[in-house]
Length: 202
Image (cartoon, rainbow, N blue to C red; front, side, top):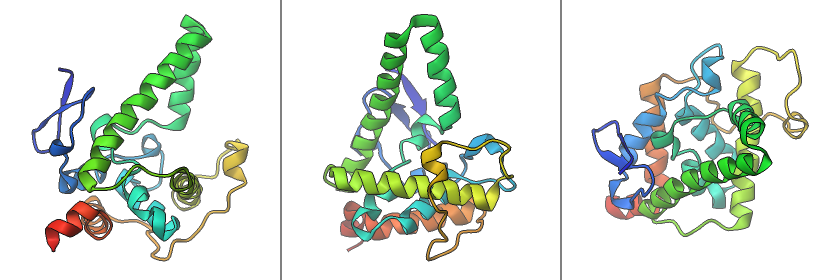
């Protein structure tokens, strides 16, 4: 088994993740200590803080899935978009276009397997294409909002698709929160949005 130790010491099977190993309190705590943008921000921007912003931007019907969209990173870590692009470019240089496509497929499958296990533990059905599109849109808007709030002005433009998006101030402005506050806030959103946790609380 290829495994990684979770925050609480659980051995997580990275190739065959299982719903019974999902602890949403642990996921919230872990995401609060994983920084985005390789730490190249004025203040630490955690995956938990980012998730809170995405939840606020997403429409109500997509919010439960927005809450989980980066949850696999609690097991797999955060990989920046530029890093993924650079890695695939190197793989293409070494092994050709087919190798790069295979590497991208492998990375996508790994994330989807963990999302599937976490989604099942949350009691959510598979997302529709509309939900996936809304979460992706909210994720991209959050990215540009975070750049405006937390990063230096870039000397080069980002992807044209991203540059065309208008940063939003969510209903609850998360200018910055300490890791423990982010973890508590994200777990509270899990309790509100995830059917399995609502059922357990009832």
